[in-house]
Image 1 (tube, rainbow, N blue to C red):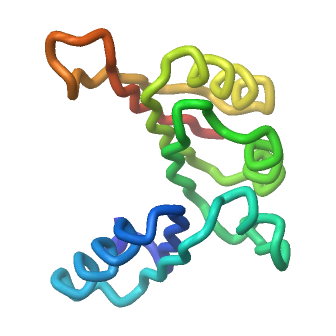
Image 2: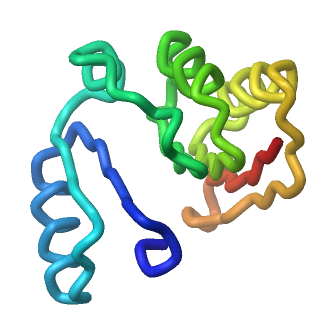
Length: 129
């Protein structure tokens, strides 16, 4: 994504994932990306970052789905596109319903079987305004 946009901001709770992401960015010579280790809910609350400048948002929430406050902030920022990853179809449906209710259109959704011979799937969906 980084070569196609002005700026990428990654927010991740797991410290090891931030280390790996920084290493990956360095290996691939990507300079327009920054990472913050934080719970997304806390990150959005602290200093009230302005998400309105972002055209696209990539979401990969935990199994519990998007926190209602996070969803509210993202909807208020009105990004043009949302790419939503989910490991829980039930919470995905709840989050998708809120996004569609806020004026987004889900133009594509794909199940991905990352765990063959189990009942678990990942969903990837594109929402746009």
